[in-house]
Image 1 (spheres, rainbow, N blue to C red):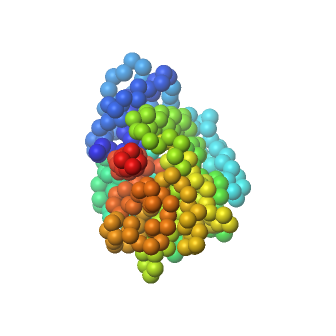
Image 2 (image 1 turned 45 degrees about the horizontal axis):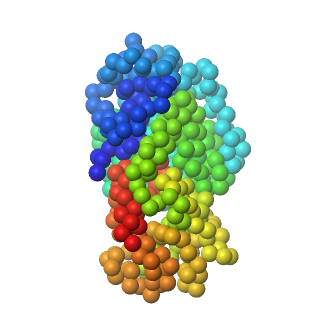
Image 3 (image 1 turned 90 degrees about the horizontal axis):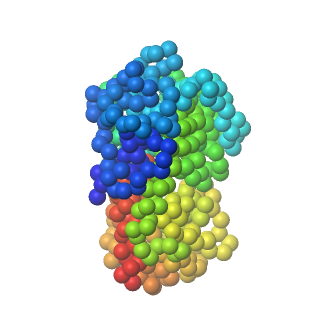
Length: 396
């Protein structure tokens, strides 16, 4: 398994080795750049790259002439953000961003960043920035952070106890407006989901807010990265990241067999108090990502519609037989072995189970790799997950 996420490796490839105007070579070695050392700092004499960047005659042919990474317009070092490319702030600010609640104007390049929603946090980290505050994650074992987030933040030289360590916001009972107000952010990023119209209005009194771009739970990861890049003055960086990540996904999908054209349902099996099955709607970004590996999102059973931020639909027992996808991936909420789950009467009604193409996922790492948008989707755990599906399909 690769210890570093593809997205993180890609952003380091861009940040440390520069960007070329030609298409990158998508060989395996291109996506294994080392993490930055904790001593890395910005070098004012070398625009747009970190001071320990290797010499490269093709450096920055796309991003040439951008302001020094980690340096404000008046020449002051911002802190441990030494690996991010920035657009010319005089050209891109004020920035106007449209969302479901209207249009937000960001007057100048933000320094203090608050994220709401896992996708927003992922996108900021993908752009080699570190949020000043971010929401806690259920299952996050690193003071409310996912392992990948904690690892990337540490890779930027920010250790636990450091004043640069992000504040982890408790969003269990809604958006903590007072806590965010105390942070005094320059921008609040919630382009995926997580805030209501009332919360948007409250937060807008504190700082410019990038609200959900689309109906909550339906925003593709590319849109999250691109709008985050626009909000932070890093549009060129964001466009290059999404291009390279899509090329990487295409390259990896070519090495897998048996996936192209297969229809798929992805859902959750809840074991308590009685087994119930929920599936994600076809417009959920999880399904969009499986599609990049060749799958086609299967429709919901007749008469069922998705609701809520997570785009999950509870499937009545009498409609389980209508889940007629070629493949079904089920993440299990509860403690039970895969073999025991496959013998459950409800599960046995699933057509994919009868063909041996029901993937019962009890591994927490695989579950987390598919549960969050952006950075976490590019961990070795998702590679394992896709290979798991490919192996099982080819065995049947």
